[in-house]
Length: 183
Image (cartoon, rainbow, N blue to C red; front, side, top):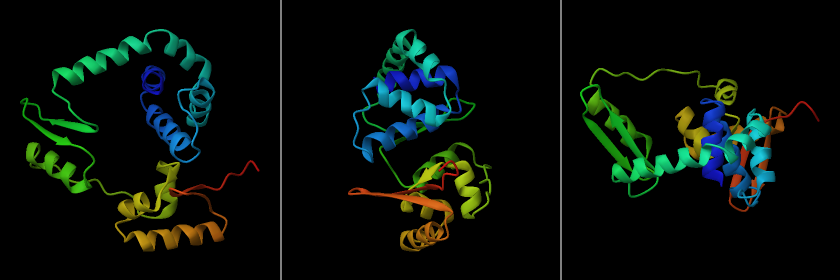
């Protein structure tokens, strides 16, 4: 059901769907809730900014067949694990990265196919980072800022102390979010 719900989210908004997926992950990994239950899927949809009623309509409608098409496509490409990333150029050349790998693997795959590709720079301060990402772990924050994880955790905790961020700690680790103003 969560995979079918993601297809329904894609049908509704092909940009907000990634926020929806992140919300689902946080519900299952941080809150330890069963994301096969519609109530949790609907909560994730609302938090991500999707129309939960439309999501349910699409979930009960075409989303399942779209999900099945994705499975068939993956099978036809020989996907054997998750994640599997395919990088293509305009000539049909491809690079494949199997499994969860460090950023450098993905960058190398892109550069093999697009020799003149350059990185886009982005603001490397906490405000800019959290304007693009609704929640982050210390590891994610350290990767985005290019600093050691211990330093990122220190910065994140200081932002909690200053009242800028909120921290949710679980037995599996912590996650930081912008401090909610509706409290």
